[in-house]
Length: 160
Image 1: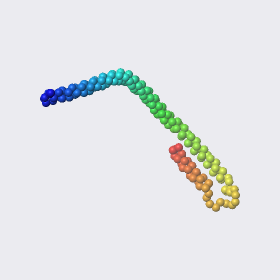
Image 2 (image 1 turned 90 degrees about the vertical axis):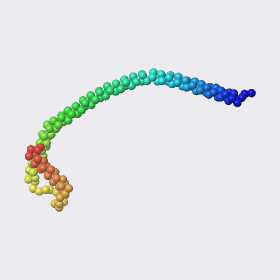
Image 3 (image 1 turned 120 degrees about the horizontal axis):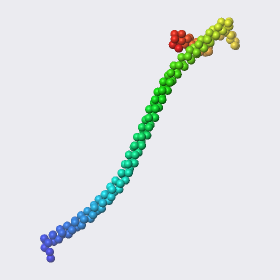
Image 4 (image 1 turned 180 degrees about the horizontal axis):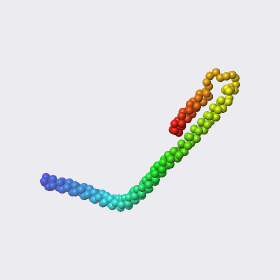
């Protein structure tokens, strides 16, 4: 039979063998994991290089198109500035004579109306007797006459 020391040594040796077997299994699995990780990293690096090249080309193409769009925008800005200038010149050339012709026409029409009013002895009323007070049409024509008089005064001072 075994002594207590020999039995203790045997138990320790058995536990040591079990621990070593467990560590061997863990190390084998860890080695497999590291091998798979290395393969995945190699595949990823093989796929990333063309992807980065494609992305670089895409960014270059986008920059080229942005430069073209910027040129178009600058040209449109120039065209709109030129249109503003042309519109200003056209307005200056056409607005003055048109206003003067309009003022002359209104003055001529007013003169004809005054001349015609002298010939007609009294205001005729279509139905019934004479009017008893101002009507809506009278207020509109009075306002129109006041506006025209203000325009004629402005034109006479050289503002039109």
